[in-house]
Length: 424
View 1 (cartoon, rainbow, N blue to C red):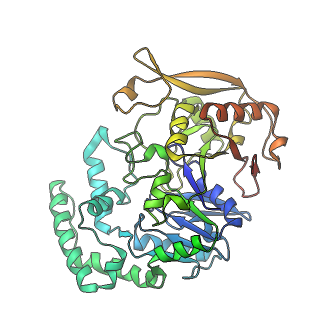
View 2 (spheres, rainbow, N blue to C red):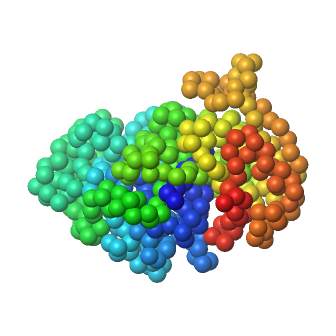
């Protein structure tokens, strides 16, 4: 069975844990978009692993992990990540990790441009991670970026970096910032590429052979639906398609290869960075932060936290074609006496069951809530779905009803073993 795991909120939903859990019965794990602006934290065997570019399946032996063509690859960042995880005892070799030769390359100058443009926006800043993702995708769309395959041709790479550096320096001078040396850019990229060279391949035939051979393929989405360049809370979004469709275009496998789509959401809502957040709640945010929860894996920034927003989840399930829900962090609500779910928005006196496209309408959106009693008991020790407290089951049932999508998995803690199966 081929499965897409995709986030239904603003990222940080716990996709890495769900992917890690599903990998046991998977042969190939594929990442198809985004870059090292994504961060997945996985707790396995009592050890904490923070992953950015590598698929979460890297923690399992005997699994092939593929970084697809839709990913923008920071070579130095990936090398640092490989060295870190190898230091934790996880060996990385070409039999375990392949990189698409069609993936675009994040240059050091892309990161500086990202930071400069974000700073220039002032109060209108997007809230990027400043990892160079947007500028790299912009070069891709403008057809003047470097792809991994280009790095095998050193002369072409040197010339392209020289041109891109000249363009970048012109922009940086406008911001009165330090400029780059093209030679230093080239040297940094090629040093990292030398380490990655054995992992580079045309991954399209590899994935098609796996599909036609009946092997199980798992697609690991990055970020979340609300950060999708088309369907998210534009302009406070990332620069790629983070929905299930992006897994196909970012890997070279067609939609006909997909058997199911698991939409991942938290039992509440969080977001990092700027942009609208109708159901945000300062009290819930402080409560979760005091528990040591909800700090970004990539930036360490505290996440804004709010009540479960079914308006957003309803559309997320529609866009992604979710066949099941994986609800994580249910245990984060264990000690709350009264819970709230946002079931609709009121905008200028009109009820909306789906989120608006008009960016200004978000500023006027007032959440319509319904309240449910909390379960006020510890769920972290539950090992079966039917062991959950009755009120927790009621809460999950209401979520399923509002999204018209069945609950399939529930997370009651960070460890791999703390994943409950609701339906097969």
